[in-house]
Length: 370
Picture 1: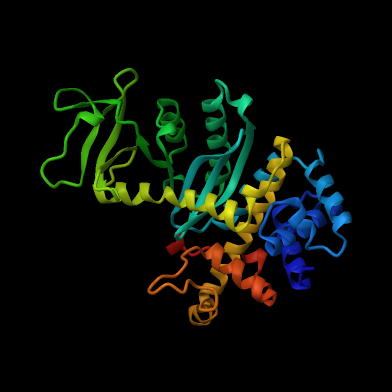
Picture 2: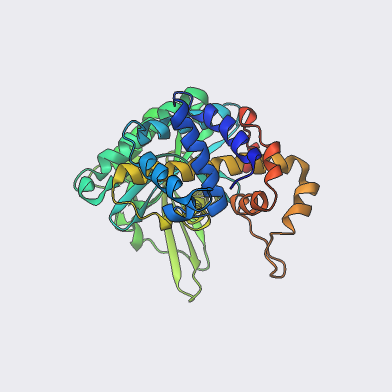
C-alpha cells in the first residue's frame, strides 16, 4: 500500500491537529488520509484498493465514516485551532468565506489564502432542507467561531475577510466590525448608496471615459438600513468583450487598486474547491448522510493542509524544489501549474521519501504567501 514514511509523518501531524482523538480514531485518520494521497479520490472503493485487503478496508472505511463518536464539527474546530496557532506570528492573514455545493449537500467553508491558492481550515455541512430560512444564521455562526479562534492568536488588525455578494448584509458587516477585522465584500448592483447628494443604485453609477476603477468614498450604503462604508467600483472586459463590474464595500480606506487586489484573492477559494474536488476527488464522494460526508471532507481538508505545510517547507530550498517540479510541471510552453497542492501531491506520489521533510510541529507559511 503506502510508504511507511507517509504513515509516520501523517501520524505525527494528526496527533498535532486532533490531540483528543483516541488511538483507533487517530489510526483511522492516518490510514485513510494516506489512502487519499495515493488514490486521489474520495470514492470509497478507490481508497479501499490502496490497502492489501480490499474487503476489510472497505468495511473499515464505512465504519469510520458512520462513526457518530467522531464529531466532524469538533474535527473542524481542532483543525482551525491548529492552523490559527501556527499563524500567530504572521504579519497578515487573509480569510475567505464561501459555500460549495454537491447535489443537495452544502458546505460552508472558511479558507486561508496561501499564495495562489487557499486551504480549508473550518467548515460546516448542511443538507438542503436545513438551510431554509437559516442560511444567514449559519453564516454568522461560522464567522463568529472562526474569528474567535483567529483573534485569540492574531491581532485583529492583521486579519482581512473576503466574501462574495451573498455575504453583503448589514448583520455580516456589524459582526465583522465587532471583531475589529477588515473586510472586502462584493455587493449587488441593486443596492442603493448616498452619492452626490442623493440615493443611487450602484449599477446606475457610470464610469467616465476609459476609467477602470474608482473609490466613491466613505458613504451611506443601503438606504433601508444605512452603514457608513467605503465603496469601490471596478470593471474589466470578459473574453467576449463585455464589461463585467465589481461593486465592493469595506470598512477600511483602501485605494481602488487595493480593493481589487484584496477581492481578487477571493477566487483562491474557488481554486481550493477545485483542488479538493478534482485533485483529491471529493466530487467522487457519493455519501448521502451529511455527517459522514463532512467526515470525508475532513480527510480532504487535513490532507490539503499537510501538503501545503510540506510545500512551503521545501520552498526554503527553491533550487532543489524547482529541479523536482520539472518532472511534474505542465509541458505547455511558458506555463506551469501554480497550485502548490497539485505539485506536492504529484511529487509525493512519485517519491514518498519527501514526507521526511515535513515537520508538523513546525508548520509554517511565509508571510509572502499570506
